[in-house]
Length: 262
Image (cartoon, rainbow, N blue to C red; front, side):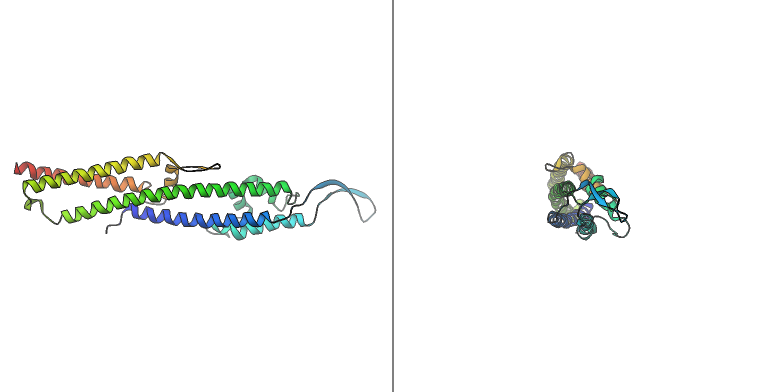
């Protein structure tokens, strides 16, 4: 069997889907563990006595406030972070949190922020986590559409290339007029099948295949993301277009033989 760009694309899409599924599970574990943490209320302006007997204004919060924020950071590092970057030692933890959950959450969880793990902070973390999870779900749905399209394309390409390989075993010079005409008709039918596949693929690329209340994933952006490091960004279009060119060449050759036999 001839390996095509469609085969490579299928491997890439399946790999990304598996990675996103693991990341989605990691986010769910992070959400569950954050939801179980207790929050602290901030009460400012409470009086506190110094060692010299003077009174100062201080922030009254449970000592567990800073510890809870630290626990959230640790939980993120244990669950989500390994699925977010290739090398967990290269990027600072708060930078990864910022990339995944946004500037506001990263700032609220920073060790230098004297806020503690308040109900507001907890809601912000859980909301950002829910939004990120929905984004992952939308992308997985789009990848499922891509895999379905790739499977259809792979079946068409495999059937066509197998037929061409078998047909080429018989020299055109050994075929009679009727056999040549049948060959030309079969080539035309395969060309029509390829044209339909190209049309369907273009329609898919123009659609939004991953959508929920938090995210819209256009298929063209998904394909560009999945295959950005590959020789071709549009593997189905590239593969099928090459087959169309091959079919056109074959048809011209058969027509030339038909003309000589007429």
